[in-house]
Image 1 (tube, helix red, strand yellow):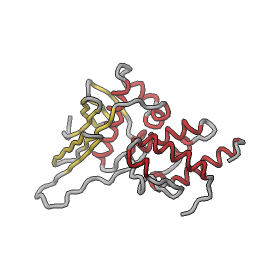
Image 2 (cartoon, one colour):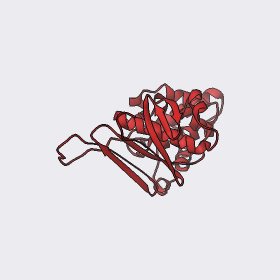
Image 3 (cartoon, rainbow over the protein chains, first blue to last red):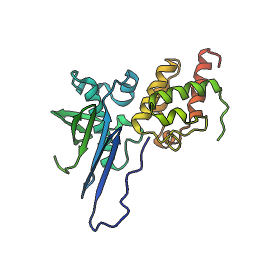
Image 4 (cartoon, each protein chain N blue to C red):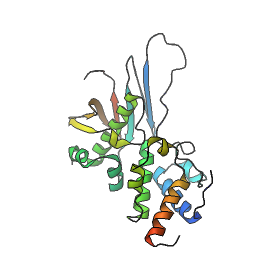
Length: 132
Length: 100
């Protein structure tokens, strides 16, 4: 279910896009002159039903089998990031945000590359550059 | 909005929601048929999907919740209340022979 995107309430003088996220004790934010997105998710076991709702069979095949729970969290967070860049959020439809490729720690969703990083039991995903 | 649904099904759904969200506030939060997933519970996408997966697991194959949700437009999904899910669960169980 979507969140309203954050609004800047005081004048700044030039175009500014922001994205914010928090989970547990970890919070992160990103800002740039173009649309950006950032998301934090917890690494934890997810049920088969969860996976069926969130990912297609093709997407699941892309995920490395080693560190499965970590990569599921990275992939979900990458979808959230692209939803935030689009300005809509996931619109309760994570499968509409399609995982297309994984290169090292970067994940491509709907043609946009997202950086991901594991930090203790959380993953952080973000897109700050316009062209990567 | 009013729902005519079996309170036992509301209790089952509430238990799945509390387990899926797993935070202190939800344990005290009064969940009824009128409770809105978006406005009252303010769920994140990942929590909503976790709840849907938990409900599918709880009610089993007789209730094709995942299939039913996949037919819903975005506007319908964000308007969903616990009672809407309870009605679908009750209809599915009755169709399959379980008395509710």
